[in-house]
Length: 224
Image 1 (cartoon, rainbow, N blue to C red):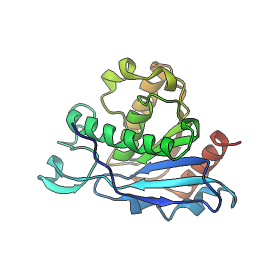
Image 2: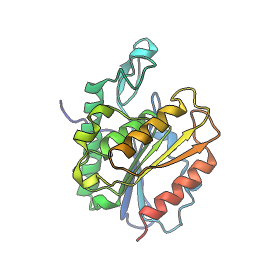
Image 3: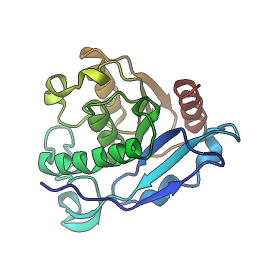
Image 4: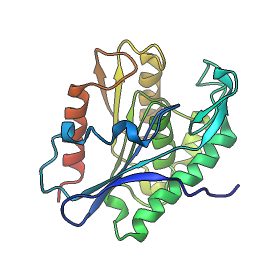
């Protein structure tokens, strides 16, 4: 299994970056999805955070009749918790880990890197951050769920065993039902994490209140 160098959008701060946020998009989308939302995070003008929005590769999606689209792994049917594409997940894990490694090579300390994502991207963010061999600043999962949850306890890297976790989910989400977000939070708690789990009156989407909460969390864990 070879590592693929993913194409990405990189937004540099006004001053040299001392921290990085890698933000993973959802199924069928691209890195462009969230590049315009940074003002909603209400970060200070002098923040020094590099924002990176990678593009997943296009693969055939079983749930959509084999239609090719950008995705971090295949979704075979609506049973997203039980029938998971482990091969695809492991491939994207390698690709995302390489993005993290690249930030280290750019001089960003691992403790100043946040991995986050929406939906499928949020699931991948949780999967990779808990397994990354260097201590990260935190991970955020927006409207997501857990991947390969039965392997989680055995694969958590000790350096990220107390990783700060921000989770957000819509109460009326028809795509990734609210209970799956709750279930992910409960499983994370059962293996020793202490996730923050926020609920919002929305469907499978993001909202302004969520962005404000996310921005406050980012400022808290990246404070100098």
